[in-house]
Length: 453
Image (cartoon, rainbow, N blue to C red):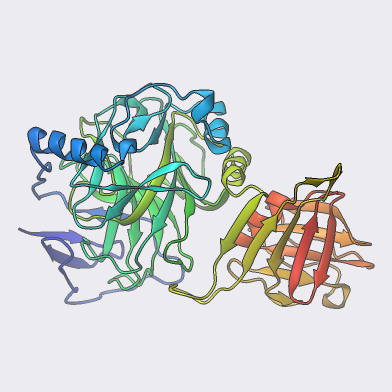
């Protein structure tokens, strides 16, 4: 089937089937600098609903026999014995659903099912997760208000994702896949998306989330676009808030967080979006069966309210806890060249003596412009302040101790007898997670180390 649509720049394109986009014949105009957040959902297509109930039952039984019980667990509230620190932190913030495999750990929604054989894997903290081959595999959960925006007017969707490729096979539109969402033709609600590295809109591996009117068309959404490392877990939170109306956001807004840090916010009024629920199931690993994500997804939480940055940062830290922390955006199979390695170790107790925890991060430069995901050191020779924008976390160090921390402010004063560490993106998350006033801060070569005090 061939359908027509419009990309966010207003240019026509057509798509034949899955992942066979035909380039626009003419570019009347191109977006400059930051692309608009709107995006297109094609609306005249058919949606096969996967295997028959009998085949699905056989499939699930086979998966269980292979030891993939996480896909067939019964619904029920989590017990203390099954809770990780991350699950405990999420449940403490009152989610309407927390999905591990096909199970809702809150007990609020019905169990889901695996379609076409998704397999089991784990998050860095050992929590169960589900891996998809990008060729028709997904999870499906029955329609429920917990997954809908208009149940309360607000929806926060929080999850971990691990891309296993930078170039997807079964794409749609201009070259992207939906990682999850709720919708079908004339019942479109919301979706999360990841672009292939090469796509028609020059959005290499952009990760985004959108909300639509039921008929589809252009949707309002937010995104971040950073270098992606194959096999690396990313913490994502999409906020859709149709209640928080103001002169800036007259119909509400969307937000997106990466690893606990707010990266983008956009207005629903840009595309006149009024979220409405339908009867479509929730799908994870796909949106409405026109594209399929290759990678893994775990611990998918839903809230009928907006979570704060502080809550999301605490959730992220619960998985990347000091005992074993590794966060690398560096070489290997990546879509960019930003470098930086985070590692942390906590030693145990020996003969009654406890060694303090330490965390280290590569320094990407000294007295230079702070770039994406970089940790920069600013000394008095740079001037009296860092001259940075508000999209970072900064900590001043005097006499080997952290004396002040500010997040989301920018332009921090540089102490005359010390220096400032300034982080953006992943480095911002790392710095705000581990830096505390009174902790020790030291520089050795091109590495900054924080020591618990």
